[in-house]
Length: 276
Image 1 (cartoon, one colour):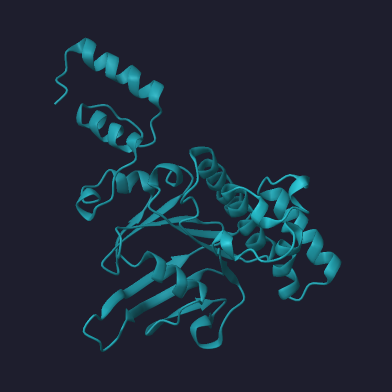
Image 2 (cartoon, one colour):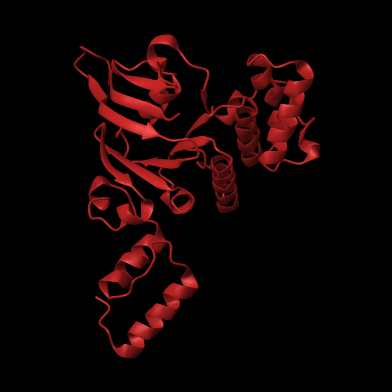
């Protein structure tokens, strides 16, 4: 069954002079196997939405329905949110990743096997199993933290800026992992400014602005619309190139590659089309 959010509202510092309405009536339905990118300018409500959907914050009003039950009222164990890699606290990576399934009621050996599978799923080698978390690189710690969430077996995974601070290879790796989880049936929702690395793997994009859903659709459809730049969102380079080419009459995909773009550019120059 899908996760259904209805009328979510949340206000920070309610009743104070610096009161801020972070969410203002959010309605969403998220299906199993969806990989959803939540984008928006700073202060648009992305992190607050993730925390309300995952149960870390209780909305001022509205509901989050899971399997027909209002999770806001009764709580839910059907979902998780990735915590920062500094939250790793056990002696070894294996111990840390095992904590999640143990906390979900699995036996010691079953939890250990869940942890090993999760560590393999994120691409950490066997040598990482007994390593101390703080001895790993930042990218490896990010993967270990993600493995800890996966091992717990959530049906809904909420990630807030999972690629922040990583190099390009690390970002692409995280994107591939998320895509694999979605293919396996997990609903993955990621809030991020990193449109360049994540739009290509997400089948759906939600853009928030001032606590409301401003856009909701396929990434390729959204980047073709005007308005993202006005909200302070920079288009990925491929999308910016595709938009320019479309203005020249080329039916270019928004995730056009550099070789294809260069070929179109050579043709346009050869035909003498103006480039302004």
